[in-house]
Image (cartoon, rainbow, N blue to C red):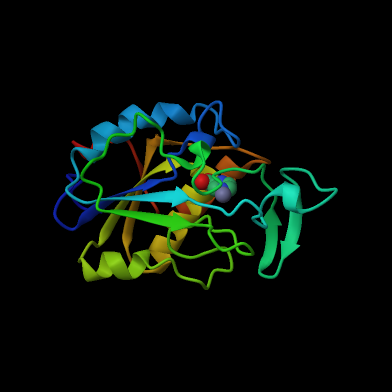
Length: 211
Ligand code: VGL
Ligand code: ZN
């Protein structure tokens, strides 16, 4: 990770800055909206920006409402392993699935939608939760010779975490811009995220380090 000035081969990957993950939303991340002005400032320094958008059908398997008798934040077993059940959120085309109205990144080149298959959730921007179904983002970045990924957005301990881990496995250089993320933090998930980043040598940096 030499040289923290964003350049030609760097991309800012902005994860799920959507109404439902902000205060007042269906799966609000505490202080999630605070990342918006930070990400707007960061984005101006990157020539290359990609956004992700959580985008579920109304009967998505990850919704507790699809499992009679189960409650949000319980875990069920999916075909691919354990799956946390969430409140209904980011139902495709609803206001909750829109980007936060103050998110202003007109030069963003690509929006990757994820979680649109009813039976597979997708935290990572690269692979769905079966860890096998690609979103196509890896191929896009490689074809554009974008080799270093700076991550920001929501939620630090789910979609940002999974995206960072998959990016490293796919051979990209990765840094997480910590002050441009907020976490849900259930059952120590933020601490587990930090341990994972440490063991994978994923640096956590701050907006000011990118000057
Ligand atoms: C997310 C839970 C469910 C996220 C998305 O963006 O971190 N978390 N769907
Ligand atoms: Zn989701």
